[in-house]
Length: 131
Image (cartoon, rainbow, N blue to C red; front, top):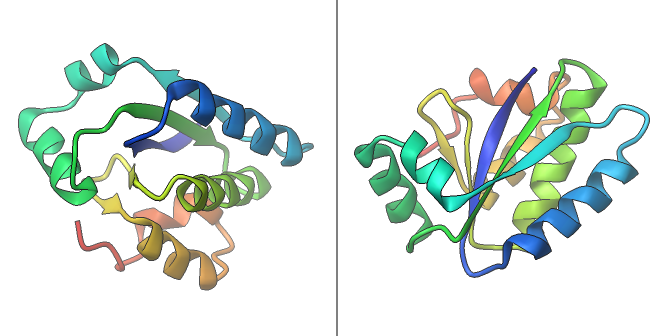
């Protein structure tokens, strides 16, 4: 499975998990999977320059992180829908595609408008990131 990490600020982890659970249920029968990162886990996982880039793009320190993983095909499309909804619901969101790119809601929305057949996994080859 491949996926992304979504960093959010100004929101409680329970609110993010509640939203992700609802989006996952709505995406059946081709769901994505998610798990919540504790702050200790994601700060330990990020290199200092990666954390600095996340903070710079968000405009503040993240308060929550969640990993969203999917398989190619309809699961990846469901994951893209979930990430778009999550970043729309919680505006201080930033997506890390694990390939050195950071994606804001506006960039994700522009990407989603292209209706990529490979869903969220299409971020790997899409040139629209400014991060």
